[in-house]
Image (cartoon, rainbow, N blue to C red; front, side, top):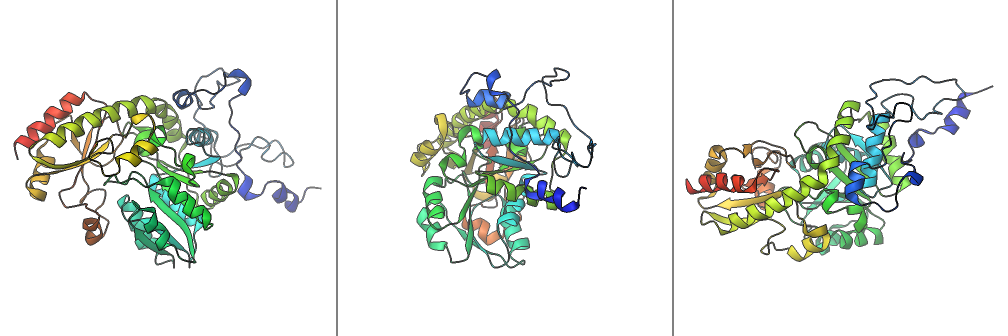
Length: 417
């Protein structure tokens, strides 16, 4: 006779999903590169049809052969696991060099999942004082009223992080490079501090992408990615991922995901399984173009300052070169123009295509963003100004267009100031 207790002990909620990449090792040459993994990443042709792509499984529920064989095939209800989403989660974990990953509705969903999973009332977090505006806001507006405590600290010096740690610190939250000021956190040094004190270290690595830097390679416990950005890369879908370095952390995040119903649609997962294949090609092109554009901006008489991790003038160039692979530094940059905020706003309002004034980043289209009223409007103004995000802060996300066309457009707009 089967009783409920035997079923629950056989399939505990926090072990519903286990890491099991679908690629058969005997069908593959060993030690393929990241570029090859981005294309294949454990995905095999369908054994029944030969279809080369993972199909979209839009089923809400999955038929069980019997009560005794419940979950024998790994799926019961799509809030817990869906074959298409699970394939993306496995592929993301592989690309990020993690044990496992959860894929959720947005990048902010991944951030919220992390804090929900590893903090509670009375706990303290040391967090970067410059991050995506939504991260700053959710810590202040939602989690602080729940009884959690956050210290917003300059992460460019690991000593600042260590000095901010309290007896109740449970999480260190870094972002590298930061959005939008492009400062770099020394992940190895911060991870050593965290491990010495038994504290988890999570890093939002959306700007870097796994093609340039994988935080887990540098001792970080958890990685956050806004999949909306370089994983999607085409302004088509939104999603987020929280990647765990070990099984214990992964099981906790999977449990929280299941309890919150914080999932991704199978259709979005299917699209991202395709778009991420070209991440390496895109990031290489975007990095090369961003370097060319940043060099141009730095020499323009109407530009007061240009910040890009690849420039020799970047104050953390040595750390960027050490932490970023293959001499690539991503597609993000920012610059200040002569004339201050008014001139900057005029430029953003008047610049011609192929630049587009909008939010988002990491896409094939080049984007210019007014962070003060778009991505970081939800920061307190004094906090925003303190980290250098002025009202006329110009952030650019370089796409894959001809960089000379992008430079001509910038030059024309700058010369009109």
